[in-house]
Amino acid sequence: MELLRAAGCPTVYIDGSFVSNKQMPADFDACWELDGVNLEVLDPLLLRNENRSQLQKLRFGGELFFFRLQDAGRSETMFDFFQADKATGEAKGIVAIDLQVKES
Image 1 (cartoon, one colour):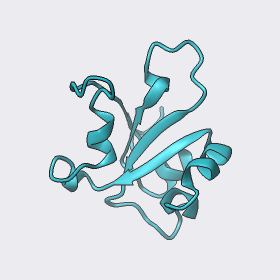
Image 2: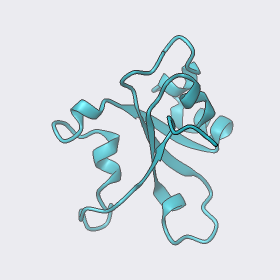
Image 3: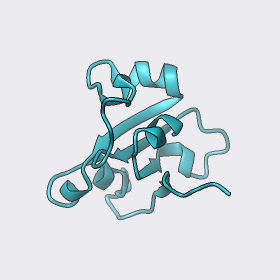
């Protein structure tokens, strides 16, 4: 999350078994807002599509997908995908982490 914070990412949304009742989740799934992010300082692995899953799991312990908040609801983004129960299609909650909150 520190890499995204340093690049100016405003919010990361966490999903997957990490936000379920699973006792020991093996990894996490997250999506992050691309808008306003300085791509020059961002780790290129966060923008890759090919081999993303394995490389990101090795480096970060989970998968991170970017999206544009303005596209949410218009076309299926990971932000939208994360908010639907995979088994039922029902709406569900996810965890939002505000990366721009100043630590005290």
